[in-house]
Image (cartoon, rainbow, N blue to C red; front, top):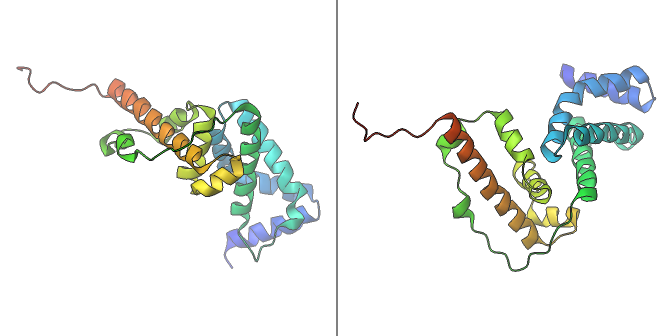
Length: 194
C-alpha cells in the first residue's frame, strides 16, 4: 500500500469519526483539484467557491457511505463536485429542446497549431465564456467522459439536445480560440517583399 493510499485511508477513518483535523487534511488534499473542476463548470468565481464548499459539505455529510473497497476517494469526491456544479447550473439555465439534431463534427475541427499555442488557463477562460447549457454539456462530455445518454439523464434533456449543445460549444470554442491565437500571433504575409 503506497503512502498516498495510507494517508487517504487515515483521513477517511478520521472523517468518519468526525475528527476536524482529518476533515481539514482531506479538504487541503483535494482542494486545488476540486476547485479546478468547479471553475470549469461554473461561470463565476463566486459560484465556483459556493459549489466547492457545498460539495465538501456533502462529502463530510456522506463520508460514512464511502467504501474504500469499491472505489477511489478522489473519484468519489470528484463525482460529488460535478453533481454539485450541475445542481447550481440548473438553477441558472434553461435547456431548449432541440429535436432531430445531426452531428456536424467536421465543421468544429480545431487545428492542432491553434491548440499548441494555447495555455491551459487560456482554454479554461474560453470554456467559462461559453453559454451555460453548452458549457455544462461540453464539460460533462469532453472533459469528464460522460456519454450523451448519461448527460441527457442527468440534465433531463434529450440526447439530441445534448449533442447540439456539444457541437455548439465546440463551434464557439473554435471561434474564440482562433481569435485568441490570431491576436497573439498575427498572420504573416509571405508575399511581401523584404
